[in-house]
Image 1 (spheres, chains in turn green, cyan):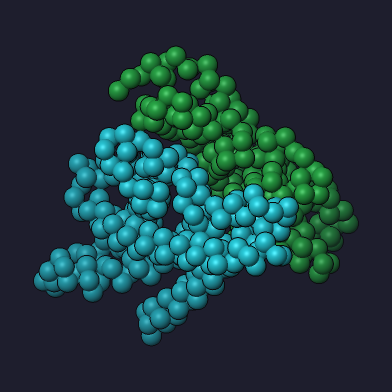
Image 2 (tube, chains in turn purple, green):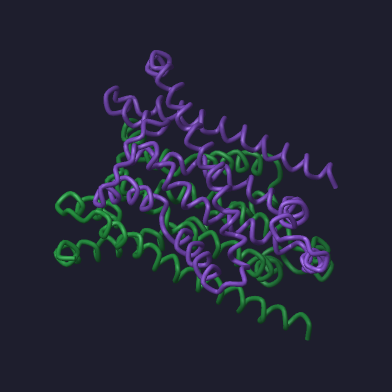
Length: 216
Length: 220
């Protein structure tokens, strides 16, 4: 074992880790933001909106994440849309993650008793305010546990960005291996970084859950 | 479209490769995962602690890193499995970790008083397992197992990164000789979506079958 290959390339590992964190964080935020309207559409009065949202959920959950990344990076240029590798990776990962997140959010919204919706309507509260002030705060308790445990999957998913030419942690590892021929040391170092990041996310998950339990 | 027709035999081979790798990995990881779950439950801390660490590591690492480890790091210590071999090993290692958790949850859900009852009736450990515990565990674990499989089949696309000529790799090669990347990637995605959809239907059928067979049986 020759650990100098890791220590001498430490700056590369640090910047790659930051890239991984940035991609994962952007995906987490964007996918939740997109998933909310999709989840609400699923229970819409209009058949067309329900159909779109159900179709989105099925397609994104049946498609490999990698194929969506390829669509964004290799497929879109066919129509003259050239995305930066990082943007393409975030786009692909977000589209898939939103499909999963919308299911968690939908289940959470359904867990709020129907009487609450009816009461809002009886009191003449517009749907937008009812959702924002009454329904969503209650639904959060059901939504957050599966949503936060999905975050670790998103972190793992960000490794796929390396396959569309992003030098995040996995991409940097592959590059370093190919010119140092030290796969064992590099992969162990990268694995440890991933496990640490994972540990942080699990900590965040605990914190968030505790916070919402205290508000009960 | 022409490029797809020209590449059709290769897509077919690649689909077949994906399917048999998936079936092999699923079978092996289910058997080993279930066995380890039983061991972890009955052999106490010295066995269950290392298994917990194992499951944490392999569920926490990206599949790509595990595959790269099998493909690049194992040959460095003298174990060269080739691309398909290392993909199968990598996915099996990850699969075992998930199956271990699925079956451990199933075993935990079995009422401990039932075990006391079987001991009071003088049933042997093996008989208890076979006739009492396992039928319950299978019923409890089946939905989670099927859900995992339906989600897991798509991750086999990552095998293309370690030079396995499965669907995604063939797609990439076909893109190189055509000007229609969008269409080709959609074809690849549909192949995976079709396999995943079959598994999703299977998941629904299995969970319904198990709930009626056992649910009604208990109520009768």
